[in-house]
Image (cartoon, rainbow, N blue to C red; front, side, top):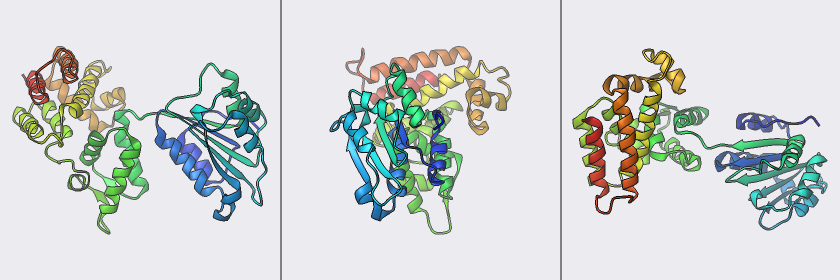
Length: 341
């Protein structure tokens, strides 16, 4: 068998759907969503339902040894082309020598899926990593960056033949964040709520199904700040203060910090007068770069540096550092006043 390289989620799924299997799938990383997607697809699609009783096994890394996994993987399938062996919590498997030996000569009739969450294989175990790669596919499931969430949301909905506008996309991304399991669950709820024949997600749909106000949310607060709309920004902050569940300093501080950090980077774009060049520099979509063009018009580079410093100070205070008495609502007002004046 030719040595396999680290691969992407999409390429693995394409091969699985084409029934092009390899003996070993070692799935590792900080993002459990992709690991679960691959493992669940293998569990549900490789074998026929009547074949699973004798040929599909789930083990847990904290309950078995590497030698026991290797012995189970060497079994032959019963009245089936394959046996599927899924090892969950593979990060808890100790003394991996027996598995390394198995990886060097895997059973072609066994599909072994190792689910190693919350981290990666120890990079110092070079021979172990090489053995995994020679046996099949080594996949690292990485956490999505905040700037990648809109593309993930749009792609997920597009595969379900549902469209969404940019504002709705950002509302969902800002409110749900990068927990992909929760995010996809909310997207499924939105999809189910769409009326027959109208597969388009709008801000009103997001407000109704996810509970994010289309007028008073972190996205609208950020836009008010970008445009230096003092009245709108203070209106939203008052709404947050009166309705803590709708928004808080803990949810919008990271959003503002990310924006002003990127705005500082935009100043260093080779041609920051071009929206397209700024988009390329920040690796964002052209429509998203528009708010950075607006930000550069409304905030000087020096002011942006001062804002970033103030955001760090307020973040520390919101966590109780050097702040015995100031409540979150007052901290919200303080940072908004500092940014806008």
